[in-house]
Length: 445
Image (tube, rainbow, N blue to C red; front, side, top):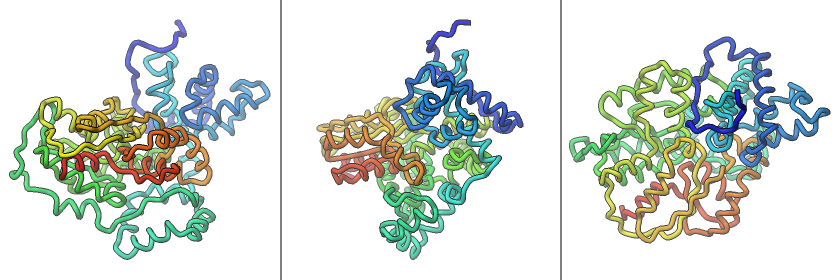
């Protein structure tokens, strides 16, 4: 067989065999890690993406043989710890992904290594805590406690104590909690279905269920009004999914597949029922959309309800652009927005839908969208942990530098956490805004 680079075919993802005993075989895992690490060592084109590859190449270069066979297998997990499953190496750099005969899927190999590590050693209390987003959100968003939590997170002495006790870096911005959750706000904003003139266009039904997500519900519930105002203005019936739990992405990144499966069992029946009732589904955070579009279907490839939800799940701006293609998006904008520095989140890029947020915002007159397609280095937990904070800042530096060069009046990202991270590191003092907020502003709603 030839060992040529690349392929004329699109990358192919294989199902994740997490329910088989072989998946957790440590010896087999180390053998596969050695094989893939050796391929990566001979290529090195991913070195600029994240910290996993520099760590790997340093281990190789500092070994006695200066090859992968000189690296202690006990050090293999140092690479795994730096991978936050952004998928960008697989989607944009690696020439050896399936269907290439070498079958390199670096992110899912890292995921397997995380799962084996979790099965063998579990996870530290901090990591279990900060990935339990439903528990954290419900507790911290109660009226009195939310005020205490928000004040404490801005207190230097408390943050130093939090760093000493839990390993959460004192400089990392932590999300605020709001007792007036998205679900509470949606009760006021939602209209009865009969009040909306619902017109299906293309594959869109104009009948949409908003999967609020933990972050959308507890940390940025103000987005509810922006979503409802924009979608209702465009004659799209919008209502919140009647009940939901975390999508499972934080637990997936921990390698805790059993917790992901429990969350799937709670969410998929609810979402599948909505699809049967004619609803399309959106979510305000790209990671949650990706979870239903990619990761759960790869974990449960034979579950018809999972595949049903996958087909009905859309990024919000992907949905609006599909409406626009069928002349179903209103262009009655009241004001231009000028320059926008728009950071494109990795978990949005790997959905393979193009830059639909940019494309929709570009429809607004007197508006110029500068897309920045570089990783923010945030990844939910990576940027807040003591041991990875410095690496996250280094990864974010090119994005921050570009923001400061552009000095646009608006800084936006579909991922609120990434936006907060990069603006916090910037000297400009700019406050980030969600693209849906900007779209609402342009409509004058």
